[in-house]
Length: 128
Image (cartoon, rainbow, N blue to C red):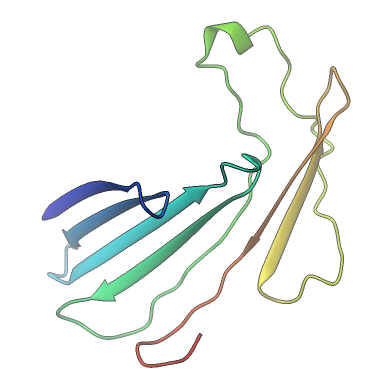
């Protein structure tokens, strides 16, 4: 780790983290993460990652995933609750090749929880 910075942008309602690191091959990379959660609807959030190779060029592989196995077992008041059903599904739909989605049902209250994510890649100079 060569550097780390964590900023709150109150004006835009975002959290920005910057990590600068060097790998074993000596390649230096800057990773910037920008996140927000809607104040109007706290169930809506977003994250943007920007990866900048500082002293190297080459291919980068990005793997996106959604995991329904996450639990709140570290929070004392949630320990007695059961986690999502093991029958979590990956719904199909007209999402397109950039999108993955997850739908899970809670075991006790039978509420549905869903998430979706879109992963898009851009090179410097390309329009979004």
